Image (cartoon, rainbow, N blue to C red):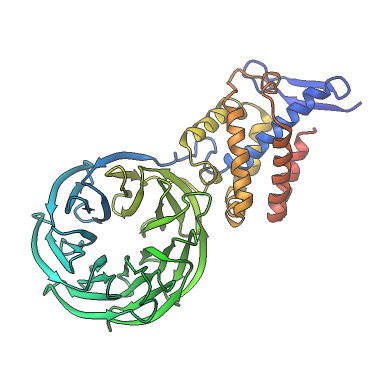
Length: 487
């Protein structure tokens, strides 16, 4: 007669619970459902980022700094470790000390400030105002040293610290003013009226690649990114992207440009050497419904994207996968990163605050942080891992078996939004069950936490789909883990 052997999970009894299928069918069925759910959790949660003694905790906000009214754009000077925040409601700039996370000064800049940029070499800060003015602040004294007239309704500002050129997006004119930082004069105005001149949606952001001396201007009216040659001050390419591009981040090391598409809920990745889109990262259903700002840390090849769901999503620039999401304040919009310290700064418009995230220690690609952005849920999973799963041979075997497949599973989930959404739903149900367990639980205790039949069905279906999309090695790992349940 066939036997089913289930490892006892409790710390007090490490024996084997054996039963005849004909005499304890209900117990075996419930236990099997539980173990399938645990297997699924192991597959998605435990490899790489939750492996014993090798997990780098998901990053969280270490400070929320009160600034002025209606904060918007912000910029950082890595050389001085100061962060500058535009307060649209107060017509001022809050100066934050990155070491203490305190506002150390407030600079009055006058009528409706909009965009901001910093030249870390000259220690000059540039602030655009909607009355066609750009204020220049001395970063040493935090005082306005001069004012320059540019085009109508200037907004985004990009700075090339190598050439000391400053680029200002004039949204009403559909032009870019080029300022010489040495003379503080406008030396050229670049016309970008060729596309979308009659539409209401105007370009508001701007990005600069200091390595190639190219300037990138997202134009939501034409769904393009205008590429300006900083040497000739002329448009050399118009790269088509998805719906209404707005925020933009540039990695001068990899020569990749990341464009936030508002209506497409995506990030377009442009290869700078070819001026063409080489990939798209879907943001729907995970970090936010409407992405807004983007910033790049070239030191870690990480991209940070904000949106209207009060979260920051972290994209691994080497895999183009969302590896993590971090909760911030209400109405998150502008974002910037200090590559020298690894800290990320996020403006929360509704809170009048700036969230500070310490990303100096990042974790490896992990499906759990992709599917579960709730740190409390991740804590529940770690408790279950350490208290129950790691204390039985089956659990430890599964951890070892799936350790090397975490990155592949993450890629599969990111490539299929519907599959990813279903997996997230199943994991959230699993967390509820896991929270009902304790380190003293045996299998008999654990199976008393009822697993719905629909969840068993969904888990099996997810296994099948992941297996079909996976490599032969992953398929074999799934086969072996399923077989282990019947030994």
